Length: 130
Ligand code: TYD
View (tube, protein in one colour):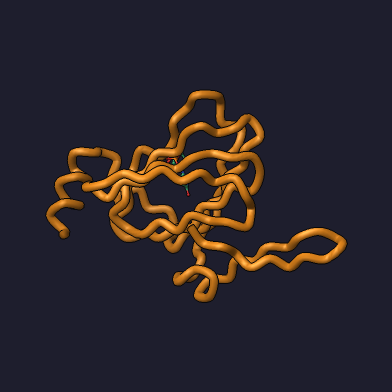
């Protein structure tokens, strides 16, 4: 988990993410996930090269990360705390509150060939790379 720098004054909070400073990559793409129906699981993929920072801008959701050996669950529920995810991690996103808005800041342009969508293939490569 990454604590993002906050600028607080009587007008509220301003949270900053600067590529190459608060995350160790240049931010090439941003996307948002929102209006997720109850009990839906999103994600179910891994990335070969891509790095990302995931932030719950509003509401909350959980990210279950899996490096092929161990799984860990992180609760994202604050816009100034992000989850930094490196390559070769399978992830599922679950338990979105109805008001949840997730922000993804990503190191690469969108490229479907860079994804693992098949868990068995991910597991084989993740275990072989250790
Ligand atoms: P998907 O990868 O299934 O979302 P999740 O993060 O829940 O796994 O993406 C949903 C759709 O959006 C899919 O058709 C691919 C498309 N998409 C883009 O076109 N550009 C993007 O940058 C992303 C992340 C997804």
